Length: 183
Image (cartoon, rainbow, N blue to C red; front, side, top):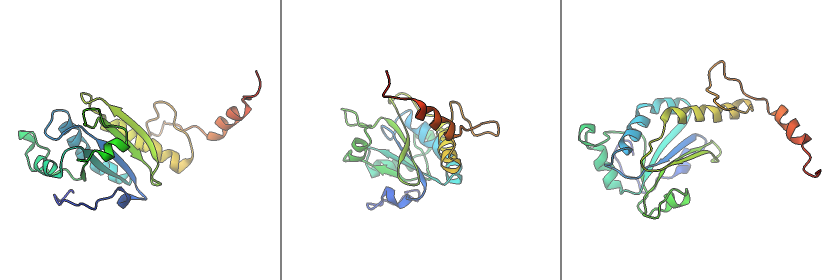
């Protein structure tokens, strides 16, 4: 947990009613992983302002997570990140989300879950390719925009004043006018 306590009873359902970003990473004390954990921690307030909780998951033990947090960044650690780090030692969570490799390591999977518990966005990167926190925030903004306005978000929608959503009514008309029965 953010306060370095270890909870055996932690559950994703504790964050029901909020948006959630669950991100999987391969290993503690590795090369690309700390850049991602630190980048997400540096922008944690931006997620929280959007009513979104961030949770990290890897196949390492809670002892390894705690040691990594207690190691200074200059020495390969991540310091006191402020979101929960979940130990998936049994690899059940990674398996359930489809990010577990044959070697028993999690790929860099990122899942954006809405307030109802529905996965609205998922990406999976290989181990050598880090993810973009900026793109994750843009996607979260797009999902929130859809939920709040009912508009659809086209390619490159960026949430600025000049970003326009698409009214779904126009899309429905085009879909409804397409006759699958004719040839």
